[in-house]
Image (cartoon, rainbow, N blue to C red; front, side, top):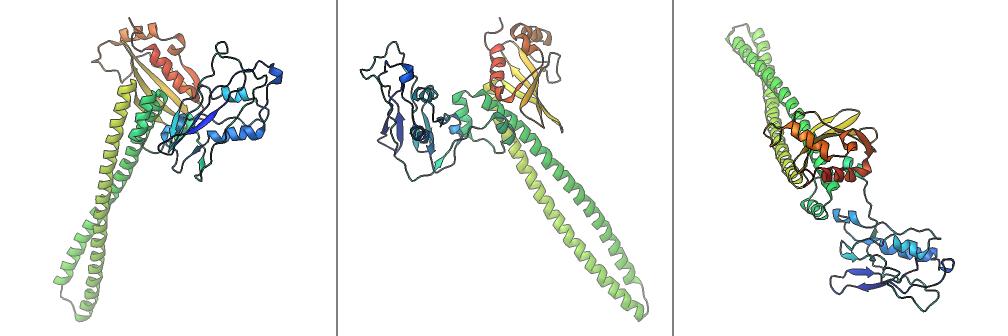
Length: 386
């Protein structure tokens, strides 16, 4: 495909730069005479794709296109075609507009020049630092998502209709909420049992010391024995004071643990609220979760029009590159008896609308999880069951 010219212009307001590429007249020269872009020109092309921003990349930058290749033998048409389908993206304080798809050769006028040369404009460099945008893989998102997603991030996913992103957020919220709750519960139970044991022992010891003091005070002994008893009583009083101080520390620690438990319950409620929103929008929900040393198992429920699909997604703990899909064609424990359809009718509808390969277990790469979810959603979606 012949080369195309690109032009740059600076937006009037906000200090933002908009880069556009306008198509040039095509050359009728043979393919063997097409100009070759040098390595320096391709490097200039590459620098235009990098985003200049002082702030760290946000969730909206996940959709930025990849950089141009730096192969010194790459021709101009192949470099431009790689970004032909990209869309305008606003990153930090700059808006980058990538080229539209190339025009149809049958409708474009040819140029009078036999050999059209590609003009790659040089964009003004600013003193701000250049930051490369890294598109995370699904497996990294699934396993390294330690922060709670913001409302703006979820809103952007809804606007882009990113079902994969919403599914990953739902799975991450379920796993993190249950894990956090279990960890806090174990810590609280352990500390509570320890505190109760120590309090009970100290109370008994304190009662025994009081009884001993009373007995010693009531005894009348010679002066020498009296001296020994006094010293013994003083030692006991010191031990009692130390026990009382330890008891006060334990009571204070118990209050701290109770406060942490209340915060954990509030955080769990927040996770539940966001998970319900994701379930309402996508129709998919995680109804069960199991974890062991070898794998993670998610029990999913997908609601369609006239049928409900229960299935399991199994991820290996050792290598999370593949996911195992297992449909549940027998009535699961999560089936609600108050459903409009009975289980037999639901099974018949599923067998009618689902492809054969979705009625049996299968294994697929984790990178295709989004496509897999889309196929299930389309199969049991609206108007799929008559």
